[in-house]
Length: 602
Image (cartoon, rainbow, N blue to C red):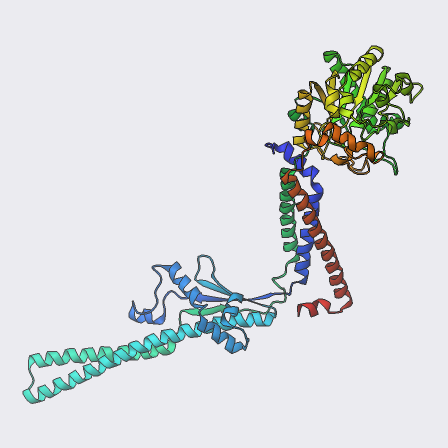
């Protein structure tokens, strides 16, 4: 795939708009359905203030928790402590929740609020009262645990002080005995004074520790208990619907550009010009045929339509080209079957005749003759009869419209050697004969890649007009068809894009009506003619059509794109049906009070 500019990206979006629209609608519907069927979830939120210093720190300085030097680290430590397993187990036991600590931990979120010392405990549950109770109980459990932890630390310090106080008491008693036995001296008096002072200090500290142990509240305090809320936090249909819209749009755009990357068909006139090296002389829009209508010359039957106007533009462009190349015999062909070459040939011949030109239309497609269907003429006698000498040219030529100087030479019966017949000297002499009496000789041949007939006749034509079909002709087939014309000694003067709807100023992008022929032909149709199955088989063997002609298979990318398109289409269709059905059931259940949704979710 060639590099795309902004205009090409817009063209891809326009061409694949239904893929994008379908993805957006289905994904958004699914998101809304899931939101409506999802059980309601409520939140309970409690806030705990974390103190940087506890009571013990005030008494002993470095004793106890102090995270003022690293506040973020200390606060995150408290956040993690609120989620430890013992606190979750106590909460479960207190509320009789009947769940595991891990399960409860997944329903609880603990986080610090900005640059503050406030920690938020958020609990989720299908019952708003339970959600609030979980948040409050967990907060209370943390506060109790923190208080008990601090009191235990103070109590340990008090026990240590009490032990030292006993030692100081024993030391005072010992000094008192020595003074009684030895008498009072300055040294003993000094030692007694120091021991007495130490004892007094320790006694004061012990009393202070005992008081603070009773006053210690821990490092956390509940400043905002959780309250029961009636508004659920989930589901949120509006948010989920908007998210589904965005996801569907991204998915649809991705699928559109994936299809574009994998699709190797012609989708613009610029591609034709790059592949063939010749200008696009006409862009013929796809036309919707009436029921049971297989072929028609729109320039005659619908002269005011867009198709007729496009053929007139092709005629004018061809006249301009003719000034440069002096063309009288123009061979009209295509790379593959069902690309509109016979339709273009018939309408072009009629259009040239309407412009006052003397025109001869020759049908060289022996295997799938269609020219006679455009003008309502007979095909019993035609080109094959003239070239084999069975009938005269005068007997084979037909004038379908009295007021137009247009002669039609149909293909006639299928000969045993179509390629050799079209490449014979008799064919060249016949064309030279027509050139003397006609202004234009339009030659309708089979597709180049299906059989070798078209290439055999190309050498005798002044120019070749290559017809392609938008959204059907592949790049490889068009490129190879151009190479075949050159190899056969022909000259491609221009191309026609059939069935491609043009966008003003963009060279065309999009796909026209695909039912014009009532279905596509396959390459095998040119080897097996339903009208004369017995005659076609020898022709195939004698010309070696299958072995000498390149038939391009579908590229792997195109096969993947088609398969992926079918799979995604089926999946999206099923999801759309399920989404609509679920919406209907939901709204009926809400309106009638059946309780179906509650029963399913319960």
